[in-house]
Image 1: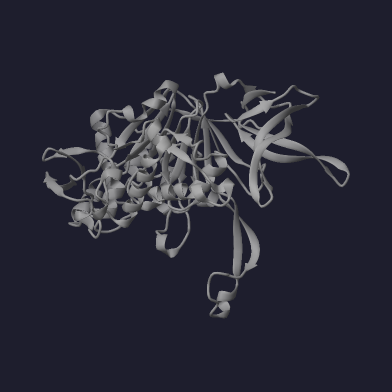
Image 2: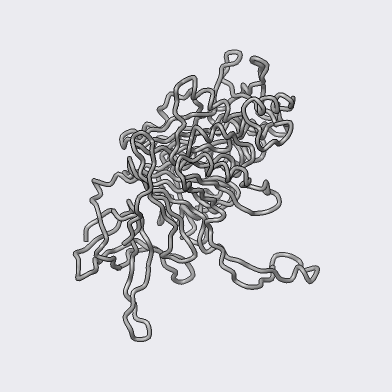
Length: 507
């Protein structure tokens, strides 16, 4: 057999089984455009293939090559001719985590969520890793300093010692990029990131940090102490040190562009649009952002400016969110905009800069800001005109309940799209929850009748949104409760940015 790349949008993989004495075919998995497999010679109306698949054995998942077949309608291309980039926005509940992967195997993680879901996903996607066979990750981008974006790094590291082999993942991060804002212990709002200085009536954080692992842990808050420890352990790993260590630095719109040079050889360009750095008192600095005086869903433009000026209160949360790393990824005609947790005030700053410097904000794919928060700018959406938008959100507990996504944001994503039938995915709605019946909690003391039982559901399909794209066409799809049933759309993007829907090819 010969290694080939799937050229259909979706390709169903079958195996032959015997059920009650009769030969049947059973779905094994569904591969997507750009996926690799082993292909044999056609036999009748079937083509024998081998795929690397997981199966349950002796109490855990194991992986290996599996003999299977596909329809003779399957189309393939050579590995050398593959130009399909993969981008996956993962389901991590309340948080963000995504993976960009190139045809030649370059990888970028953009945020890692807070819980163990991202670690479990990459353990399944990149199997059989070990301390002496780590997964190279060319860059880990932590868009900003909230634990629902970086806490998952700890879970990745903890997984290395998990008793179940299939839940372990070992990574080798070549670079870790962050915004430069580090939260201080016991400090609030204006003092949350160290010293500030004033410029034109606004406060700026001037104590920006490059290498988090070298910063004094005694002044960090607990979340950043844990992050520092995680990065520090990787820096001390003998194999990683021998390889050359890890580049750790902050990114801003002033960065020289070299951070993503490793992608340029495949024609992928990454522009850092934010945070927008200034120089105050001779020091690099980032703006402190205000908490709006009142929530006005329709406040835009001058009305928003007035609303912000009514507030004399700098906000640590608005500052850390507003100074998220924002990436514009371009590949031929296709453009992705990854926005972290930016808010109205920082969106206005990005808009102003785009006008001054002549930067187009057009986006074919938008990772919507801040899990679908109500604090968004319709002017910003008008400039992006996204075809496909993804909101990463999820219900976990009252502790992280912010009513995400807001109905106003979901509606606006549709209104300001440039196609008549916009595509809006919400990760928590894409997931499939299977009803399992009544359950009784085992780890909680039963006090009342109400505590004794509840309706239980199992998440059998996670709300991940997959993109496969070349320089002029995008495939986006999600899974469902059925292995062979996908929600999928294909879009052609012309050089001028016009978008048109295309047929999804399934074999």
